[in-house]
Image 1 (cartoon, rainbow, N blue to C red):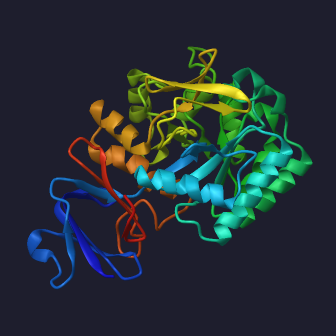
Image 2: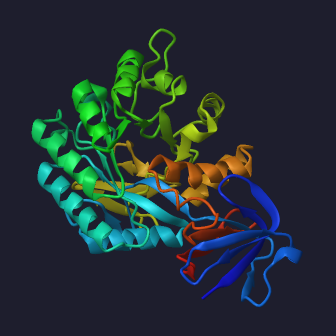
Amino acid sequence: MEQVIRADQVFDGTALHRDAAVQLGPDGRVVAVHHGADALPRGLPCTDLGGCTLAPGMVDLQVNGGGGAMVGAETDAAQLADICATHARLGTTAILPTLITDGPEVTRQVLEAGFQAAQRRVPGFAGLHLEGPHLDPARKGAHDASHIRPMTAQDLTMLCDAARKLPALIVTLAPESVSAAQIGTLAQAGVLVSLGHSGCSAEQARAAHQAGAALVTHLYNAMGPLVNRAPGLVGATLTTRLRAGIIADGVHVAPECLAIALQMKAESDLFLVSDAMAAAGTGMRDFTLGGRRILRRDGRLMLEDGTLAGADISLAGAVACLVGLQVPLARALAMATRIPADVIGATDRGRLQPGARGDMVALDAGLEVAAVWVGGQQVA
């Protein structure tokens, strides 16, 4: 059904527009964005959101789980659909379900589930993210060290094949665990190589970037610190065109470090990720990860030894966190919509323009999710 949805503010992926409306066609895609009450098309059903901000559905490139489930040994296409639906209700209408370091059998299983989800056109499924197992054990964070290992020829073949079958595939790896030739082969096959969980030097990071690495996983976390004569991965990220995901939950990254990244990186090169876990969209107080108990306390997810294990925030919450730090709303929204969509080449997501998917989120004055649409149909 063709329809119009109006709000006091509409963010089209780039800019905020006052008193605007989005016209959706019967196929659930955007027909036009109209500016001003006098420009509204006549004769179409119109939903007026009043003082809300209407924005594209958010795009999250690092989602470990949600709705009580973790991506892992139990994952199939149905579970991926459930995780996507959970995050849609939280305002994120496209995700890359993310498998953290596990064994080869589980990795193959999750890839097969992703192939099936892609074939079934599961709403919200935009590809997969494999975070590990080719990491630096000294920077493992909450990853299981027993599964961390260097990349083999078999791994390389599997990943290159997977990239041809998925809408998008991000692989997080440490430069120390792979060769430049392997990075180049992955990039040529269409894998988005992301550097993370690494104690590498800035020189190693730049070499990996030159070989084909394009991204950095959760900037500042699980990597060596920025030191005056040893800038490491952080320093290389801040001074190159490596695009970086960052967790803005008030826990993982201090406000000062967020400010530095926002000032140093080109606007198109920094985007938000949630690093969400099974607890997302639930009231769970604890859950298990690889047989280890994860505690949910005061906005943190932690192993029992206090190690952070993912984040307890949605992308909408991360946008609100940035705005609370005086980041302009338009930039914060772009970091959760258009920019991550562009990272994975999903040009019909993360923006409201003719031909784009009718995936949208309405945020109230407090930047809480008020309503969500997927393909023009309201789901929350």
